[in-house]
Length: 480
Image (cartoon, rainbow, N blue to C red; front, side):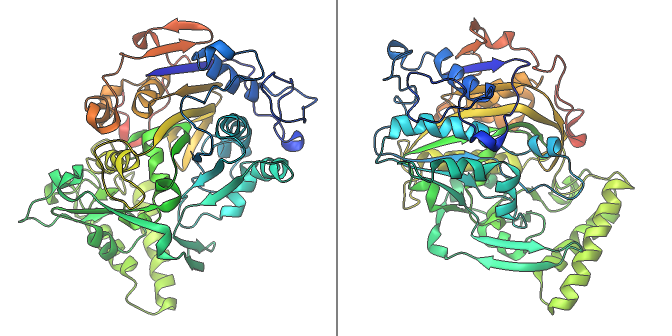
């Protein structure tokens, strides 16, 4: 269990005009294209692997294969990145880079995955962004077209995959302008039932109303109830031998941070199976917001009514606009927490750890097994990080870091330290790190850490910015 961190002011994303190729012909580099301008990202990804001691005996030779310990020839590898949403009107390029994985990082990762998987391996990358995200646009904004163009005439099987099984594009007024549903056989239903961490919040007497904003609440109720908890996972994930996570280093308003563990949400095909919060305040057995008045409960009831959509399309448009503006008023003018976006959310982190359990132990049929069914590694893109109200609207920060880990939960604990947070203050990490059976992770601090060529202890990891990342508004009293 290790973490290898490269940090430096030279780390900047290169331009797309040279396909994100390396500026140096490294001995193991399998292609003939070399960039004429510096590409510090490619060199840093390589340095992460070398610093971790991967295939140490062959480093510096044409046979160096750093990922060979995790990826076998012929493997199907899915690179799970963070393409949460396309660039919105008025959003700067830097702000976008603080929320989505950059293609220059993916290019280096794919090259080294190809070295390990060989010519018979299959490499895909992508995730399931928000239902209203325009896939082609988020790929363009992240710089992916240049990456795909590079591999078009080369003997490497690489494809970008949108893992959503339901897509709803919205117009400027919030109305649905395009709708698409993918064949259900692309999704695999996995039942955790009484083994789900969500079941601790249920009983056979009390009905718990699990919710995810902007989806039909009746559909969500159909996935989650006492001793019934099901998730729809895209078959691209469960049919892979290796999942290589390439998330961003950023904050998250519902679970604190979003790196590897939270990134597993990107493998879910139907978002309405994801329990983001429970309806209402704690006094109503909810965690959508604190106990602070009847007004927000009325908004929640209205939101449920709107998204059940039991009325004509023209009326649905009017109601959605009214709901959207009412909730915006409560959030901005009244400064009220919405949709589980606070540290008191006791639902979302449980859903995340449920998904980690599935990603490790569910086979291609969705059956949970005693032994892990695929291998997991992670490289975090923190060249531009995101602080504040992530994951959708973080403020970009030049954190200038990349790091690799061979264990997702341990890597997330390192990410928390780099962001200036105590992992024990984040329930998602506290649970994962204290239950080795779940994600094969011992307690924080028991692994190896390397930073810019030096071995460091876990407790010695300092905030990468020289200060903590600004937490989401609802977490400011909890993240320490």
